Length: 416
Image 1 (spheres, rainbow, N blue to C red):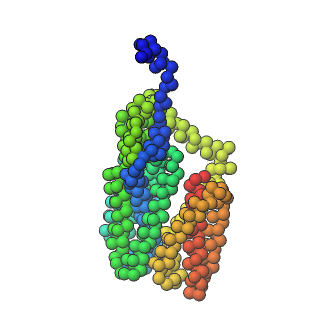
Image 2 (image 1 turned 180 degrees about the vertical axis):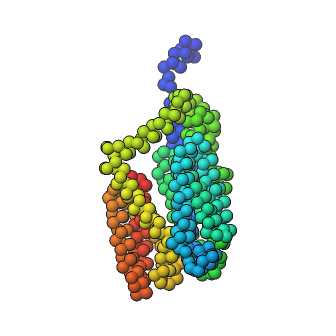
Image 3 (image 1 turned 45 degrees about the horizontal axis):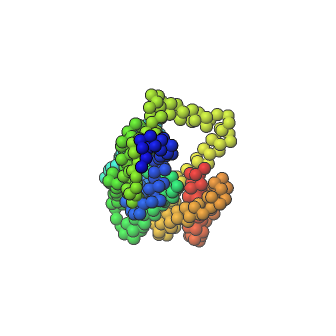
C-alpha cells in the first residue's frame, strides 16, 4: 500500500482531466447514445416551425386567384379587381414585415434569448394568420400580413441558430439540412391544400388561410414543449448552472448515460468571456466593425456588391413565385391549382440537385449555373405564354424547371 507521500506524489503526477466544451460533450453523447428519438423530437419541432413560415408566405399565391377573395377583398367598393393596388400591397406587406422583424430581432435577439425570440415569432405569426382569415378589407389584410412578416423575421433570425447550437458539431450540417428541408414540405403542403380546397372543391379562402396558420401554431406548441434554450447562449450570459442543466438534458435525449457536464467545465470555456465587464459592448462594437468592413474598399466591389446584386435578383425571382397561380390564370392555363402544385413540387429536385452538386462543383459554379439556367427557363416560359393554349406543356415544364433552379441557387447562396 502507498503511504501518504506516495499518494500525494501520484495525484500531482497524474494527467489532469480535460475540461469538455459543450460541443465536445455533445459529440461524445451522440456517439455513445443508444436511443435518440427524444433528440430527434427537438429537430422535428424546429422543422415544423420552419414549415409554418413557408405555408404563411406561400398562401397568398393561391388566394389571389380565388373568386371570393376577389369579391370580398380586391373588388370591395370598386368595380374591378385591384391587383395593382390592393393585391400588390397585400402580397408585399409580409416581406416588409420580415425585413423589419429580422432587423429588430437580429439586433436584440441576443438579449432576449434564442428560444423566447423563436416562440414570440411563431405565436405572432400564427395569431396574425388566424386574424387574416377574418379580415374584412384589404387594409386589415395588409396589417395581418405585415404582423405575420414580423413574426417570420423573428423566426428566421433565431431558428437556425438554435438548431445549430443544440446539435453535435460533427453532425451539425445534417441536422440543419433536415430542419431547412421542412421549408420544402411546407411549400408542398400549402400547394396540395390549395389543390384540394380550391382546385377540387369550392371551399372559402378563409378556411384555407386558417388551415395555413396551423403548422406555425403546431410548431410553436412543439417548440414550447420540447425545445430548450441554447446552452451556449446561457453560458455567454453567465447562467452556468442553467447551461449545464440544458446540455445534460439534451445529452439524455440522445440516450447518453455517461458522465454529465459540470458547471465548472462550462465556466472553464465561457467564464473568461462573461466575466469581462464590457463583453456585450465589445461584441456589439465588433459586429458593427465587421458590417462597416463589408463596405470598405477591400470587399465592396469584389464581394459585398456582387452578392447583394445576386441576392436582389434571386429575391425578384422568389417574388414572382408569389404571383405564379395568378399568372397561370391570366395566360389561360387549365386547372391552375394543379399546375401550381407541380410548380411547388419542383422544390424537391431543386434541393436534391443542390445536395448532390454543392460540394462537387463548388458554391460559386453552382450558383452561376443555377441562375443562368433559371433565367433561360423563365425565358422559355415567357415564350410559351405568348400562345399558352398551344404551348401549355412548354409553359408548365419551363416554369417548374425555373423554380427548381431557383431553389438550387438559394441553397448555393446560403452556404457561400
